[in-house]
Length: 170
Image 1 (cartoon, helix red, strand yellow):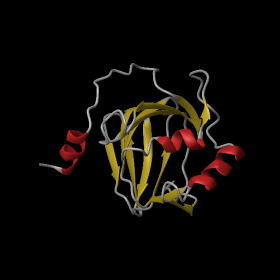
Image 2 (image 1 turned 180 degrees about the vertical axis):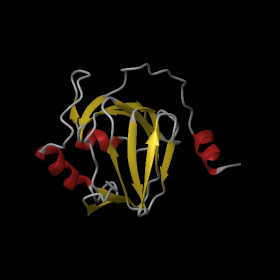
Image 3 (image 1 turned 45 degrees about the vertical axis):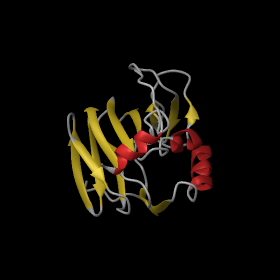
Image 4 (image 1 turned 60 degrees about the vertical axis):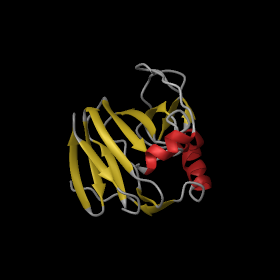
């Protein structure tokens, strides 16, 4: 039996459907973030985030010490920098950043839409750092000072380390 099966066997989870534009919404670092599935809802299996952003949204180079991160691009294009290598990730493509690997990503096309799969509980990071979004308008593609302050307050909680600006091939 796989470890994930044993986790799910311990607690009952209910099926659900979360439609397009549904889920708790946050403006986060220049992207509109939807919480599509929480670790609690999936019985500890994973958290699923949908993000929408315009070109120019970029994360700092960082490391998740206890979390893997996977990106699936629905529309648009991202540049994903993982462990010293930069990949172009377009519609239908997947990129994976294992825990412990320095990484960052940049949105390269307007109206990009992508899913982020994280370890269960990792989705709460977006709630802790982001601002509630009242509509579907994409925010300015840069973090606010308040978001940066909240980020610094939760780095230890999420075992996250900021390494500096990303280094993308131009």
